[in-house]
Image 1 (cartoon, rainbow, N blue to C red):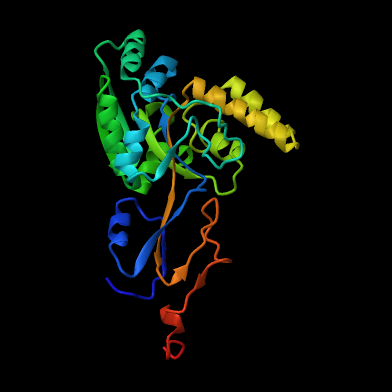
Image 2 (cartoon, rainbow, N blue to C red):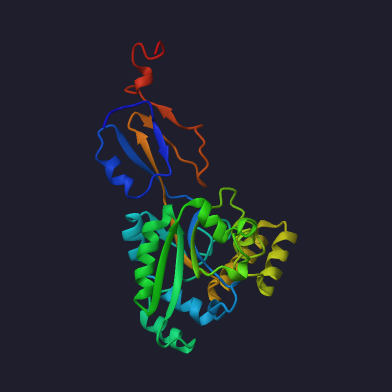
Length: 292
C-alpha cells in the first residue's frame, strides 16, 4: 500500500503474487532456475503398507493432472518434472517422460492391485502446501481413493515424517502420502534428493532399494561429471518406473521487490545480492535518507 523500508520479500506464495501485482510500489520477480521439487512421499514403512505394490503407486501418479495442479495450486508457477530432479538440476533427464494424466489406466491398476472398491488413505501436508493437498486429494478421489486430508504445522509434520523426531515408530505411522517441498540449493541431487528421501536419509519412507543403492554407490565412486550425470539419469528412470514417490512439479521461485530495486535472483534459491542494485527513485537515495 506504500513504499516502506522492506525492499525484498522472498518465498512469496503464488496467491500473494496477485496482491503484489496490484501495488504501484512493488513487482513480482520470478526465478525459473529454481532447484526446488514438490513431491509426495509414499509410506512404505508402515505395517502392512499397501504402497509396497508398485501398481498402487503408479495408479496414484496417473491420477494427477499436473497441468491443472500447477494452474490451480501455483497460479501457473511450476514446471512438470518426470521424477525427482528439477529442470535445472544436475542429472535432470529431458528425454524422460512424465506420468500422463490417465484416470482410466489408474482405475485399472487400482483394480489389479485388489482395490476394486477403492482405498482409503490419509494425505498429510505442511501448511505451506495446503492448497496443493486440497487439489491432489480431489484428483486421487477422482479415481477411487477416499482421502482424509491433514494439514500440519512444521513441528507436527516432522513428528510424523522426520525419522529422527517421530512420535511413534515408523511402522506405526498411519499416514499414506506426505507432501514435501525440498530445495536442493547445492545441486547435488544424488546426495540430497535421493539420499535424503529414498536411500536411508532422514525422510526415507521407501526403505533402501538394491538397484538404486547400486547406482548411488557408483555415483559416489565416479569423479567424471558426464558419467555421474548418466548414472543419476539411470536413478531417475528407475525411480520413475517404480513410482517410488508421487512426482509433482518444480516450483518457480517468487519474490516481491520494490520497483526501485533491480533484483537479480540466483539459480538454486540462495539469497545472493552481488548483482542487485537500487535505482534513482529508491528511498535510500532521496535527500535526507542517510540522516534517517
